[in-house]
Length: 126
Image (cartoon, rainbow, N blue to C red):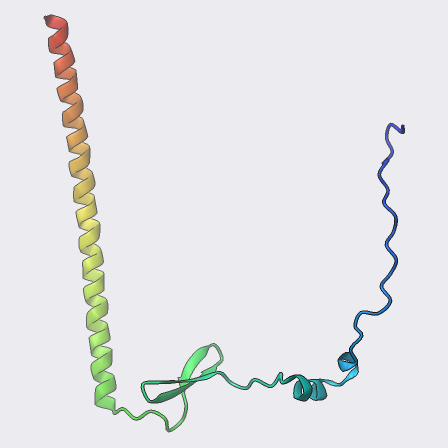
């Protein structure tokens, strides 16, 4: 038994004969796309009568597909801003309420501790 040598030496695996039995890997790219159906095109969707396509990481309205008018868009933007402001106000209120709750809880624990100390102190005197 060797002291410093590695006693475990597995046999080498033989190399594979062929990676693929299919002849599709021999075809050029355009032929493979036609044969395998790899031409997907731009992702598109239709949402509320408006056709959108995905370009450069963002959904963009296709030209001529927007049927709404500018007044509707401005109204929606204004409503969105109002909702964001309301959301921010509600978050602020929640933070204030959580602070008030933690303060009240801390005061309650202090009062309970003082009460326990007074009870134990009064028991010692008896």
